[in-house]
Image 1 (cartoon, helix red, strand yellow):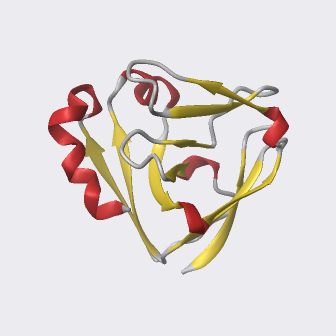
Image 2: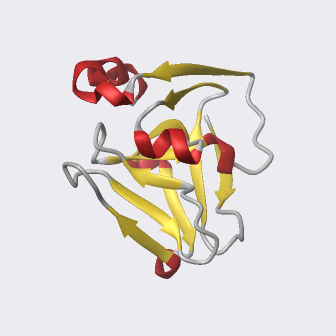
Length: 126
């Protein structure tokens, strides 16, 4: 496990996540993930640190309102959010990590269009 730095596009929001050398990210086909290209890395709360920019985040909720989609007010990028599947942790966007190197990166599809029927497949990631 090692700490990796990340940020939104403009750098106003900066974070760090402690991740293993071999990671698995999910590519979700739900309406918001498909449109934004978010690649999910589920991170427990104690392995995530918001370094800068809390005041620059804006919150968007839809459907059940459980997920807290957090976007940078300046550039509009969502570098991380509180997922419905893991409301006590974070989902970090793999694409927002800066120069992170991993031994292996596996991208798995996730059928978020049918979230309720597939959420159990996320249990092994937290």
